Each structure stands twice: as C-alpha cells, then as structure tokens.
Length: 339
Image (cartoon, rainbow, N blue to C red; front, side):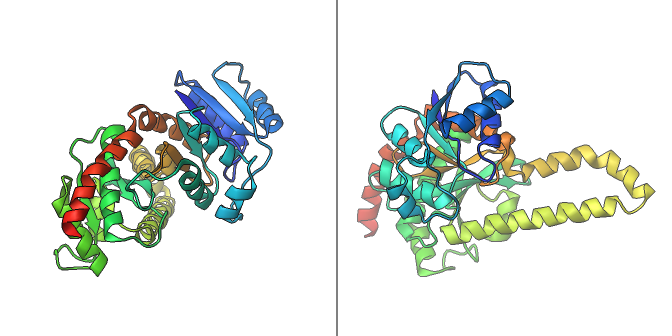
C-alpha cells in the first residue's frame, strides 16, 4: 500500500501531520508519502528523528486554507498539497489519500478530479458515531457533504455506509436506520417518506425510522440522513459530551471525598471519554467518488493522523470503492421500479 498524506492540511500542519505519519510508520509496513512544502516537511521529519525508508516526500508549494473558496481553490491552486495528492491518487500513484484540510475543497476536489461513481448523485461524508450501549462505533452518513438530499441519495448513503462498515469495521449484515422525527412509516417529510420506501425495497438490513434520542443507544449500525441533519447531530453530540465531562470533572474536584472517588473511577471515565474522542477513530471516508479518500478533523493531532492512516488502509485494501461501484447496478433496477 502507498498512502498519500496531505502535509499542509489542517490547523496543526505540518508539525502534527508529520509526527502522526512517523507514529503510523512504526506500526505499519506500508509506504507513506507526505505531500507539501518539502523543506518544511523534511525539517519536521528531522525534528521527530525519523531515519526510516517508508516515509517519502513529494513537493507541493501551494496550500489551500480553510478560508479558500473550494471550487476556486481546486481550479487555481494546482500545486497545492490537496490537488497534487488527489491527482496522484487518480493516476494510480497511491492507494489512499488522507487530508485534514478544507472539507469543502476536499469533497469538491474528489468529485471533480476523481469523478463520482456511476449512479451516485452526491458523494457523502461518513463519520463514526459512538454506540454507548454496545460500546462500538456506528457510521453516520451524510455528515455534512450535502445539506439537502433527495430520497435516492439517502438510499445511496445507506448502501455505501453498509459496505464501508462491513468491510472496514467487520460488521456483518449491518442494520440501517433512517433518522426521522418518529418511528412510524408515515412520519417525516415527503423526502424521508420516499426514502423509507426505497430503503425498504432494497436488499439492505433496513430497520426503519430512528429517532435522534435512540442514535446513541445503538438503534442501528448505519445512520442515514442528509448532511444538514447529520452535521447537527454530530456537533450537538460533541457539545453535550464535552459539557457533561466538564460538569463531572468539576463535581469530582469539589472536596477531598469527591477527589478520592474521582481517583477510583478515573480509569472508567477515561475509557468512556475515548468513545467520544474523534482522534481515536482518525478520519471520515468520502464515499461515492472513484478513489479512497479520508477526511480528518481540521484540528487533528498526531494521534488522529496516525489512526486515520491505519483505519484507512482496509478502506483501500478491501477495495470498497469497487464494491460500491458494482452494487450501484442493482440500485438502477429499484429506481426504475419506484420511478
């Protein structure tokens, strides 16, 4: 495997990106190619005392910032680490592209440079979501690539999410749920009602509508919704979890008795906190484009970079993109039947 890593993407580039690559190189035998300003990247490799042969550097002098217009940046910044990396993936010079850069630019770039899988109307961003009952990760699709989706898009999200979580996370026959304001088939908008019918008619293990309060309780393995709802769910969960952990910490620091209790439960609280920590899961796959692409959080540290690289390897090795491409043929039949 040859992993292409955006060395200039994110708030902590290139320091944390390079450090994460070095950490990953200690655990895998695959080659890592860091793309970006060569002098700066080699300086960080030296700082991290890396002397191995599995990390190489490809020079790219431009950088797409978080403030750049996605379409304009992709078209004008040809020598940016993001564009160079996507083009290398397209040309077969790598098996996986990982970036913590501008989300919009990454999705637009993947769509324009790699192209959509035939039959996929809109690529989706899939994010890991913690199941706090079974203590295992679920997959939320879409996490913010498209604010609005059609019923057919939601069916595609369910299909792509099922393939990904089965091949990458080893979840057999994953349960697919549609986020809605009630569990009844008749609930929701015209789009969600239509999507319900399409998901029901598919070969997916569709468990029906799922209310938001049931998502953290493991109601399904693949959580399907449009990007607006998905992003709100993720941000709200993140905010609530951080607030709860802060309140618990404050309560445990009130007096000597509570501090002693805090010491006793410290290990369990740390384990629980990790379930909500995006760095433990690394990155989110961009599904629906002709190439494996992983998006990391913009503020990713070396730990998140390392985990994104390691988690991205089975995404490429299991050839998830080709499986999605093949499965889209079956959806054409369903679409014709439902009109």
